Image (tube, rainbow, N blue to C red; front, top):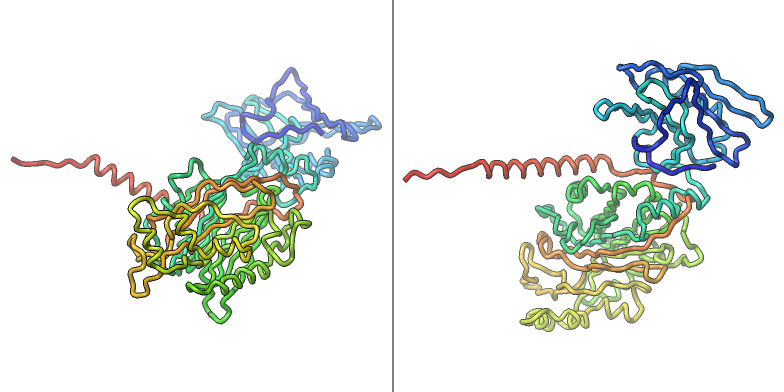
Length: 529
């Protein structure tokens, strides 16, 4: 079937034109058992200034069978779209049988002047606007001198898939439409909030770093020892990111939180998001140590995000290695979403079962050698010698041995240790414990395909001082491959309630700022001499 892909805007689609009392349009379908033709056999109705999308429509149709017999439909006045749909499906029963997983939808349009234009989506209105649509046949009917027409569309159903690579929702055509270079921009961050109830006044420096040359497609934020009001934290994230992003999924394991925000127009290309947790400190009633994982498939590339909080203590390296081993064995993912490459997966390691893996959190690995040795490097007059600090780093040492995070990489570190600060200050621990400054907060990545993940920026956020940890974030470019519609899709689900609350707050604050500026500009100072 010759189908043209387009979006359902007023600027596209066939234009109503008349050359006489009868006009006809045919569907070009070489594979069809017979040609499908819709024929208008009466002159257009006289113009009416009180036209409405639900007004009666007049049209007739002819369907030719191979035997030559023609089934004619008498002129019928359809008072509602359901009747039109029933008639179309009666005339063209082969349409949907040849395209399983695709459904008919109709769009009414009046080609008046822009100020008088009437437009209506009768079925799946909002989804029709956001989906990518194949025009199924040219024109079903026209009526009224204003050029009103009703057009049939074969719309992609986001609840059903196609196993064919050609024309698939997750296929190469759709991927090229959104990402011509097949690379997505990804923001991954970790922050130990120390259980503080008070959130920073602004999260702009954290989520919208000045170093980013472009907006991100996906934000993943992991929190350890999160604040008591998790909903308020997520609302603040939504408020900061703005209306272009929606919360695709979020999860919690005790005081471990993870939030996954995605560009609003990309929610149709995600599988269901799956979650799994691991507790490493079983004796604790409050789950402060453990791991939380979220996984999903985007187009044809599977992602796994893990945030962890390992055992604390300068000398407890062995315990942290055990936390890692328990996590990769016990994290039960994926569940229902198929593995994109099961032949390269291992039942003993969850990180081998996904194309792209990001593991971030408070791993609690310290800088050995004592505080004096570390402070001597930090207090150098010139720029801090970060490589000299990393020579004392426990995690770097264990990764070189191959005892932890096998196959993972870390972007080059060019920032100061993110732990442990005095709250509200830029000084490291000045209490009697005198903890050694360390790189406890890290972002690591692993890919099945070499070169798929390109780190662009790896830094800490020094401006947020409400915790003894500084947030650490990474900016990445990740290659995405096309897929097939053989996965359970998320069907555009997102947290709508959170979205509305966050955007209302954002608008309210912007209005307050504008009012303050207006008051400042209108105020005058008078002096009496």
